Length: 392
Ligand SMILES: Nc1ncnc2c1ncn2[C@@H]1O[C@H](COP(=O)(O)OP(=O)(O)OP(=O)(O)O)[C@@H](O)[C@H]1O
Ligand SMILES: [Mg+2]
Image (cartoon, rainbow, N blue to C red):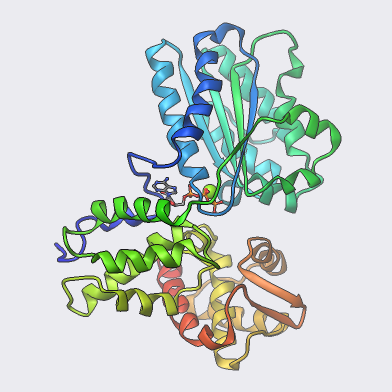
């Protein structure tokens, strides 16, 4: 069905990467200056580790994925068979075992990971690459999240010492990129890990007001029909996105545009007005974006839904863990799912992700939601979650 408002609403999805990434040219240039030379001299490469550091929504993920595509193309022109494998620790595995298994699977279906230990998986991966003459660049996104929940797994040790089994031989893994929100994740590393990781850091600073406006304006052009989004509307979205508590997280700006566009459409408007943005903004919680919700597994979503519902019916900002469990079980029954045995771990995971806020076992709430706007926010969150859970 064609829409009066949207030309292509997918262009506002958090997973869509636009052709141009304004204000990230410098970061891309640095990445190229490091890895292009290795492609040129591929027979003598040793892996280079780079860290990408910057706050939420500053383009770390999309820039790195774009860089991977560009490097693969460049390698192709140089006659090098290069693959970029991107794993997101929040999505692809919260244990070393699962994460490495997914890493291997993304690269090839020819290695059977059953009965292999995580170390063996990496070893097999390297042998496979050597045998096939393939080179790889590996990206580990949200590594800070992983090391925080698994401080004893020493994944960075495994990943940065990969080449030690065959010293002196050039490596089929040309590099690894680790993405984190700040350098604080180093406090979970031991000294050997810190030393092999090195000090190559590329910073992704917060976008300024003007930068936010330009980035969002480009997306408006791609996603909306001409003239649908007023200058004033764009000004308001940019202003909200650039100032606290959002502080330049582009994802929130995209969400605002998306939901405001839907609202305008549902109400039969042919333009998106500042009022639509205000209405939507009062209903979304700036600290939980659609991407956060989409990246949860089914149990995570159901527990969050249970929390939203209990908070709403109890009319308070916090409920106890026991009450949450009861509410979760009711919801499972409603949807016909078996409750998870890992209930407490899943709650803990939501706390690590910054979605649930826990003051004590008796006080669980939703991060960033103040009492005044809780009610409206929860109803819209419940609608979103219901749709998500049903779609699973
Ligand atoms: N310079 C840019 N130009 C266009 N779109 C951008 C730019 N920077 C970010 N975005 C968009 O903003 C959203 C968030 O970007 P991204 O996911 O890369 O952020 P991030 O730094 O990885 O955040 P987080 O730390 O939360 O993972 C994406 O939808 C992305 O397409
Ligand atoms: Mg990211």
